[in-house]
Figure 1: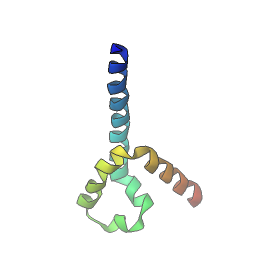
Figure 2: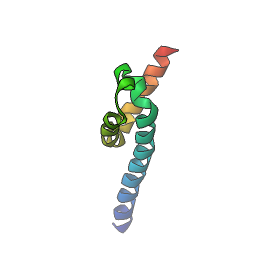
Figure 3: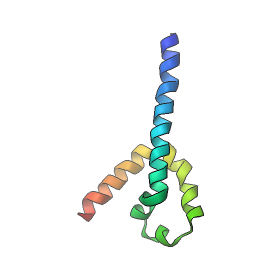
Length: 72
């Protein structure tokens, strides 16, 4: 039982760490790839998307992959 108590927080931390890295990428480039209007907005608007990108990074990553496939 103690190993499960150690594994679950580790998995959550890994998920959030990947989400943080993805959130930084999404802040810099990803949001502009998904929406053309975000290119003209202030950086503070993009900053508002980062917490959501951290939590929803698998879904947003799949959307970015699909967008890049359709542009090629």
